[in-house]
Structures are given as C-alpha cells and as structure tokens.
Length: 339
Image 1 (cartoon, rainbow, N blue to C red):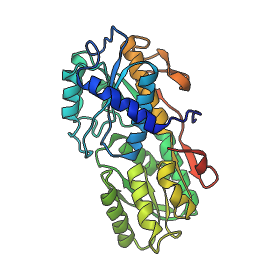
Image 2 (cartoon, one colour):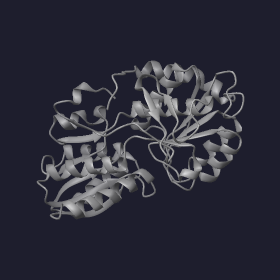
Image 3 (cartoon, rainbow, N blue to C red):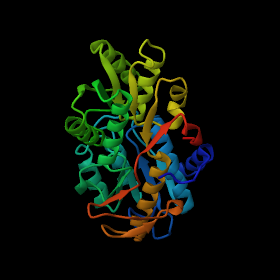
C-alpha cells in the first residue's frame, strides 16, 4: 500500500512556512474558485504537536507545493470536541479555497463547516470524519473493518488467543476510534470467545494522560495479557511505560503507531508488531483531493482524479476516497520506513 515517495520533512516544513503568511492574508480569490490557479488549502488536524499529524500535514504541504498552491496549517493544542470551531470560522473569513480537517467530534464542528461551505470553501475530511452532510469528501486511510480486523488479529496472535485485554483509545468522541472499537468488540465476541475485553480507557491523545492510563490498567487488572491502542499517541505512551516496567515482554502491546515512534520499542522487545497506513501519503492524498474539488477535476461520487505520485483515485457513492489497507510493522521491516 505504501508509495515509494520519501519527502524530506524539513524541506517541506520550510516551504510550508514560506507560504503560511500568504495563506493568512486570504489565500485564493474566494473559497472554492481559485480562478488564478493558486489553490489555497488549510489543514486543520485534531491538535498541533501530534507526531502523526506532523507527518500527514507534511504530506499535504508537499502535494500543495506540487500543484502550485498555497498551504497553511492551523489547529488547537488540545483535541477537544469544539476546539476546532474558531479555526474553521477564520478559514471561512479568509476565503480559503479548501479546508482539510481531521474531526475531533462528528457533530460539534458541523455548523462551522456549513458556514464555511456556504461561502464556497470546499470541505475535505481525513483520518476522522464528520457526519457526511458536513463535508464534500472524506479521505479514509483504510476501511474501518480492515483496521479493526488487523488490530484484533495482532493482539490475539500475540496473547495466544486467550486472556484479558484492554483498549487504550484517544478521546471518547473520536469518530474513527469509536468505529474501530465497535467493530473490534464484534470481532472478539464472534471469533475469539476466550479473549475478554475488560476496559476501554481514554488517554485523550495526550502523552502523559495515556501513560497514566496504561499504569492504571495494569494496576487494576493484574491478569491483563494485552493492550490495544488504536492511536499513535496512546501506543507510544503505553510502550514507554511498559519498556521500563516489570510488564515488559509479559503484557503484549499493539495498535496503530508510526515506525519512528515505535522503533526503539520493537527493537527492545516491548512491542512485537503494530499497524498503520502511511500518514504522509494520507495528507498528500487529502490535499490532492481538495485540489480536484476546487479546480473541478472532480465534484462528487463516481468522479476520478489524479493524486500525483499516488496515482488515480475515485470518489465512491458515500463521498469517500480510500487510501488503502493497513500495514503491519515488525522487527523485520521497521527500518525500511522513516516517518
């Protein structure tokens, strides 16, 4: 599923910074038009300072540079349900051509998105969707079923398909996390009767909170055999705790993480294997999707468009563009990736 693209993130960040001031002054000629060919795209992740979104935003910046647009990155410091609203309102006031958003809550930002759409801003969600009525296209990293199945397969294999496990999620309102967890619960119930899910804990995509939640889970459930953390912040924090504890090598940990975050924990035996897609490619695809909507190359379900080095993609009947299937990282392949 991974492309062979390897961007130098420092160079991309520098280019992004150079155009950020232009974006702050208004970007395109009016939301959704970009008559002069200079498409302005603003990325709004769940929160800033998150390594996952640092990588996806860099991919978006690279794509925008390729098609000659203007890139900006804005966002809250905390991933709360309403923390993105003011940034959406500002983007609408600046008349950017497209807003690319990873939603902290499926409902809380919809009114703001509707207002932005009403002044011509194209709305692309990625990573975590809103209600479909609130956006034009959702760029999905992988199907919910594929992500859930990959995580269940990993944890059940690592614990011998029996025993207690817990889930360490992001926020309780995260649409993507909740969809995956619901499918994981169904899979466990249907196919793994000897595996007991004892708790779903929430680390709010905060490193210290996730670290503390890991400690609490291990103290509360002395027979815990595994933890699944379907969030890059959570799995890294849990691995950090396990790596210096008596539970290293005794309690399995898997979920969704980036190779650069997890490399040391794979090599020291804390983590056997974990999964993810390439977030850089996800941001890259989201930016190209936004460009296709603004320029009219694609307008809705059934339309195809070119996404640079990733090739051709189609918008499905639900207004979704799919990047691909999750990929499993382990000691044999983790050094092949740098993100």
